[in-house]
Amino acid sequence: MSRLRSLFLRPLPLHLHPGAKREAACTMAAETISYQDLKKLTASGEGRIFDVRSPEEVSQGKIPNSINIPVDKVEAALKMDPETFQKTYLVKKPKPEDENVVFHCQMGKRGARATETAVALGYTKVRNYAGGYKEWSEKERK
Image (cartoon, rainbow, N blue to C red):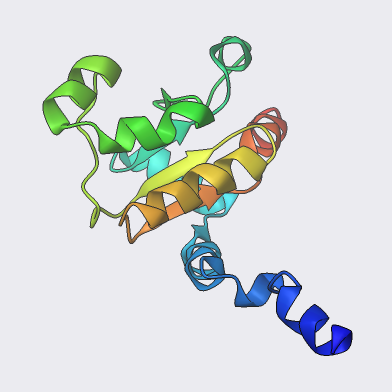
């Protein structure tokens, strides 16, 4: 009897947890962009690049034309109405279906988190620059 009871009292394995499929889908949907493609995107002026590092990190250097939204503010920013977003960040708020929306940080983790947050909020074509500012600054110094 105690063996049967212990089967029912165990916590669910992570892959069976109610939110697991949604989170896995978010992770799989979050794509990355290479340095070469990001370089082309910045040169074209057609992309919106969001730097999710802290303002202190950004003050040490940044990818041209990137907009700073610290990672802990990304969700609230993407939930703002377009007018408030534009007043706060001085750029037009991206629409969920917009292409060429990229998040990045120093080395990739916070950028991935921001990208996954955007995907969870319905943004379908956002990408993470996994190389981050570290890779960008190294390649730009050639």
